[in-house]
Image (cartoon, rainbow, N blue to C red; front, side):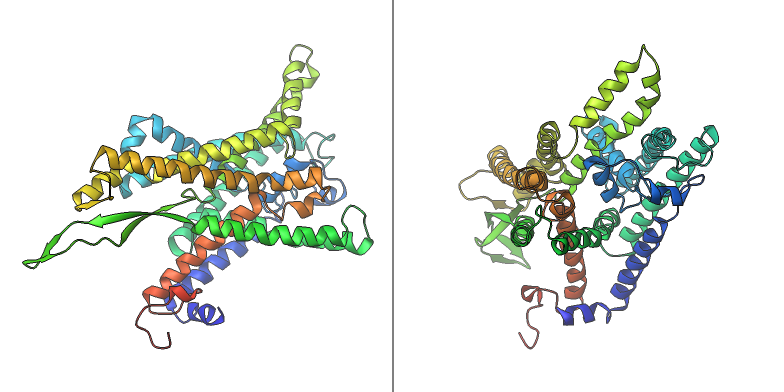
Length: 452
């Protein structure tokens, strides 16, 4: 592995990409400590409102910027929400569906619409959050001069912060290594891990009965098993055998091959379903902020009460939250798989190339066979993702494991961290293999090299 790491810096292009990615992530980390205009940083440290599971979940995705009331407080989640809306509209809107089929040109157009929608969503969420920040019962007295001026500055600053994050994420994708947006979420989650580890260590040092050495051992074993399971599912494939027809090259006839196969991934959607589901379930907290002024009105106080009840139920560990979380993950697994893998197109391509699946004729039967297999393996992958995602809530409820420790064992954080890390390592390894360098895995070595 050390040789592979050293090889990264021997390739000029790959070295520039890795360094550029690290510099951008460092810039984003500095931005988390820049407070909003009109916010008293000392008051934030003395009295911070917004405790609870949902608050911690939002803060985790923002890398701690939400708790610090930074210009990056909303993080990249508005962009994720905009991406969800555009992808759903792509299925229902003929115009967007046509754009998605135009290749690179259509993709750029859809990305532009996503950026516009991100600005609107960010401004709306910042508007709702500005009401909450001025509420002393929720955040404390952290605003110097509450009023319309502060709300305007809050909206402008947070919107600019999210747009900067989105822009830097796209720069990472274009000039760096890996998917920029996923890496930003990865860095935000990893940045809060040291604090969780320190809390676990302090609990052990103080001899807290809620977290004994036995509990720590169980947590470590669960942590290793979850990581191994995520890796297996990420790399897991269902290989469909394919028989290639006879080919004519240079006037010569070559016999068909029967050892080829079509790989179908168990988890085609990757970490996208988990990110999308978590993003949707964080939205109710912002609407509660909007409903806060209504508690002073006798005619509309019921709206505030309903919003508070919805927020209280949509918290990690509660039954409604868990059920919706599982349903959304399974839905987005199937939805994203349907977008990225079309059995009809695959069946047509197999027919054009003269390839067949043994026992199934071209066309409709091949399409139905691939659809049936894809539905089964996608269900298995979706159930695994959902199970790992709700694992921390179950450990907190039934084993009384501290929440800060449990969220390192599974759930959204570990799936995203492991999934993004695997995708990034694969991209780096592809760069190494193209230039005849050893990768991180032995099977990644190029055939024919000495020393194999």
